[in-house]
Image (cartoon, rainbow, N blue to C red):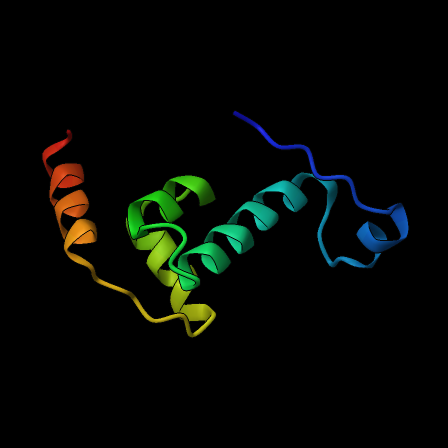
Length: 84
């Protein structure tokens, strides 16, 4: 599934990002924000951001968002490590 987000051109022009960087940056920002709200697990956040686990952890750290390790997160991390 995909979502289209429409923004005013003047708002996009204010962003310090090139056209090719905007979508990637917005995906990472939303994934971090939704992870911080506990709407997404760590694995779901990483996949939403389009990043591997290490890169997503770094993005969270850059934003001072603590890791929320739940039992489900640990099981998901183990499944990911096994390639399941």
